[in-house]
Length: 409
Image (cartoon, rainbow, N blue to C red):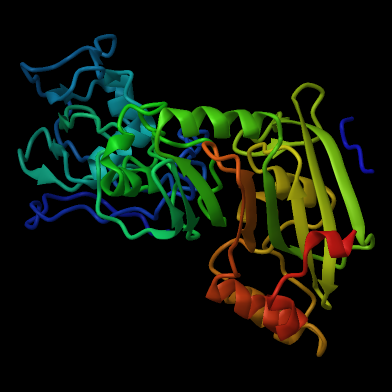
């Protein structure tokens, strides 16, 4: 048992194509990644400035530095004149200073979407704006504050792969890349939106943004989920999950050749103390997390691992394998992308890993008792095509069909 508790300078001139949309910035890595809102050291300090040839000109609409407007309103147009003390600030930071409660990320979104306009003090010509633009005294900045969109469980016609359904529940295979329920970074287009279209009566069953859900799997993980369709099923399944009376097995491609054939991880589980997007088993306080793992096969660079959950914490398998030194292939958050040594024995495997556009984790088995009849139910989900190709290439075609967990322990 393993116990692990313990760029060039650009000057802004009046733009003859000022109506054109600003160029979008690169996509954010993660929908919840607000921790780095104020971290812009990587951006060049020589970015554009809003040029004012006569900063001393008086402008009647001037707002003092100490004045700010609340950004908690649904929307509205706000105009500010850059004061001497604000000259040199980034445009996004300037807006955050003037609009109380406006986050840097939201300011950038408004700028990139063309909802922020700037005019030079003397030329009175509209200037192109970027988040990193440096404002200069006397320039006029206007923001058309857009109403904040909120997560919604509205029905949306999104294809579902349903493997079983009756009046009480349904079992489906979630593809990698599909978020389970709406949240701040994914306002809709989720599994819940698809379920609301397929089963309209789910509305009001459980939490507003998670109707019918008794468990979930990560966005980039594929595999089996059960969804309740009425109160009886929701209560029964929720109790079964709480008692750990659900059979849940996952298959993972982990980086590195694992030494042990059989492992049991029994740790505490909580937020990582420094990297808040991650979880860790090396915390002093948290919930108990137990994963049983068995190695099916090994290649030169990887191990094929079958994992059985005794508990179901967020990122549990990902954390347990990563903190053992074997992160799941393709799992960027937990170190599952590496620069492997290129040798004649590894070059083909490196190419296979490089073609994977997802993390190599799949919920392959789900078993429980039917909430109404008590009949045992068990479902198996074969590896999706991209994961099957990886497994066959690394470990051989025979490994695409998974053995029973009991045969490995």
